[in-house]
Image (tube, rainbow, N blue to C red; front, side):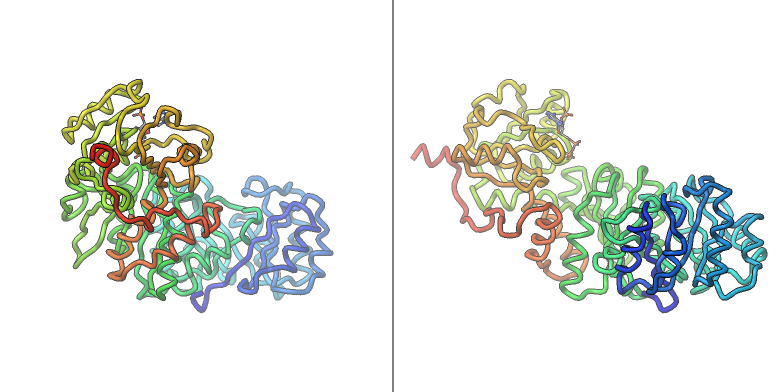
Length: 509
Ligand code: ATR
């Protein structure tokens, strides 16, 4: 962590017993433990004060302040903490708490301002007022990132305050990058609960993830930043997979999750954070193209960008989905002349159909909403048929490019397996690693191919573009399987098979 940045482990337990246990089990990397007294229902403050261990920060927030304490309980508890000489107390910026700020004693006072609804317009003025009201206290300004670009305002505020003079970051999913970058921007502290422990504010990153996943303690002025842009982004595997690969190669990069509902709210971050590269996912894959300096042939052809790389200050749009979707399949069968049925007409289907046509396959599109199938089929000059024609539709490969079967909807199948005659069945869903549809197809003797290899191949291609190094694909696979709750031993077999010709041709000979 940056030298002047305290790591504050948040303990937000609802019983004294649990809070004592969590305090005593505090992570060795934490400098201070925050005890949220307001959240403990059977609070035995004396017992918690007697515990020996890490320096304590006592926080008692009222309901109006985003906590759970009744106003009448709050002040006596703060008085008790100060009388006991705890290391830190958290006070709220406002008239009433200023009396505690002025009280003598060894306790360091953190003067907090929270905005759970947004980021106020004039942060500098707010900071100035806080400093004037309590010159001896450590100010803390924490706001909700309403727009992804709010984190830049917090960065600028931290820079103007100087290292170690202010605690600041943004809450909420859009604020996550600020929690990871705040130490490098000069924040005097970061707050993080232990993994699996109760969170006390939206968008918190666990202490383990801060150190092990994002390696926030190592982020410095030379660290190159990467990330994934999408909405929602909380469940994306990409930060885990890319950061594990970066760490395995010892590269000074950090890959962040950027959530943005509208593209416009994210665009300032591209240049302001000097991002070296970006993975782009739903719903921004199409719209981002207009904001780039150039597009490669594949992203132009598909009409979607899943990768942005900065090359000599130019932002280049690329698409690694197409190659990634087809490479595992091409290891199983020759694509030229193969009869391929594609289920779905969304973004994934578009990348597949573009790639299949380019490889010389004969493609038929099926989609629940026929109008969408028609648009896709027209764009790439392939045929489309009604869903009902899927029953025993003769083809060499059947691909599910819909979201049917994706967790948590793991019991659904796109079409009954009894309808499937294709010898090769490919499901681009990778969570679960083996969908019910694939499992049933495998039980019926079909060759199956899951979506994880595609996910890994697109990520590996991006990694190489971002870092100019070949991706450690095994590290990526193990990380993805671990995150998906599967054993790394259950590897999809795709890459071990030599290429095979389409089944129909074999039958004809
Ligand atoms: P992606 O970019 O991942 O492909 P998408 O653009 O939202 O995501 O596309 C989702 C695809 O899954 C669409 O083809 C959708 O069909 P519609 O065009 O009819 O919406 C398909 N899909 C989603 N749920 C489905 C379901 N229950 N049955 C059949 N198709 C479904």
